[in-house]
Length: 76
Image 1 (cartoon, one colour):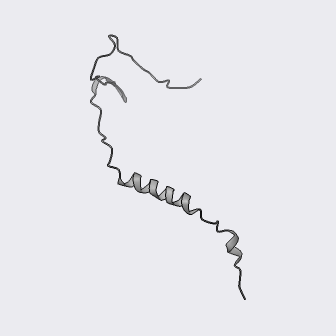
Image 2 (cartoon, rainbow, N blue to C red; image 1 turned 30 degrees about the vertical axis):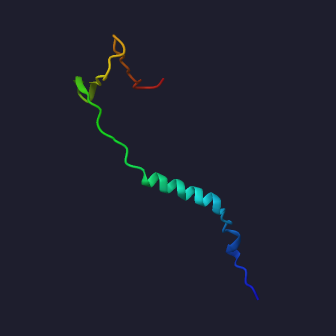
């Protein structure tokens, strides 16, 4: 007499090929060397209270006039 558990319908069948690809990808990610990270060199140009304007010097100067970006402080 074979007893069937009500939980057997909740456990999906494994697709072994898909699982092997997934674990191979996971192993590849874990065995890769760590990326090189660090701070970008910058110079403080201006400061007022908590606001700071930073200058990030370029390795090669591409344009004669620098670009100044200012994000909006409040959306309309």
